[in-house]
Image: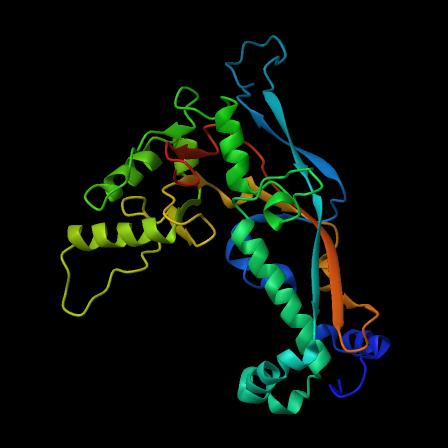
Length: 327
């Protein structure tokens, strides 16, 4: 792109199509930190009904007489809804020339690859969209009001779904999918988190599970672990990968996608956290279009996205009694 000449939109899109294989999809950038431990469901254009059979039993003692099973379990439907999301950019390319020179010429891409500025600029937009998705993936709450245009109002994130189910009474201590930890502290966090895991059914404890916690809570756990463990010289327990006492069946999932100072703890499996979208190609589908200003670069991409839990049954999921967003 010659920044001294008016922008040729068709040339931009042609160049991007030519080098589309080097574009990194939105879901493989910042938001990948969350999505890599969840289950993708492509081909969802509006909604899809999920469901898991719960509490079924058919085995009994042989008597020679066929009775037939009438307790095949109960399928509890949950709906995964995807909502349209747009990412839009409008700016003067001149502002990005220095960043392009420092990043591309500075070695982020190999010198012989000769990636054009147009591709870099499109990728920059996709990068920003992925950051926005990462920051809203738990806190987003859909709002149909026309004046609510932020990414936080575009879909329902996993944390908002949990809080809504909690408000509705479907997640509670009585239903055994809430474990009362109280406020976590360095003195007892490890014991409380282990008690939460041990409180799960044995069928769950045999699975490989994930303990979703904020970076702040994870640091607190590392400090507790350091206090509890006899340390050899020059050893570091920071970044513990598994919850102590679970025989590496429960992996600690640290995420910066939780709100700051959040003490919410989510215990579930990768298979239980599902996200839906239509086509994988939508995640790199940013295209330039004419703006009416020959020196203004405008581009947009549109995709559908949604989150859901397959089941909130206590055999599949448990949270602690702390809010997602601190008061």
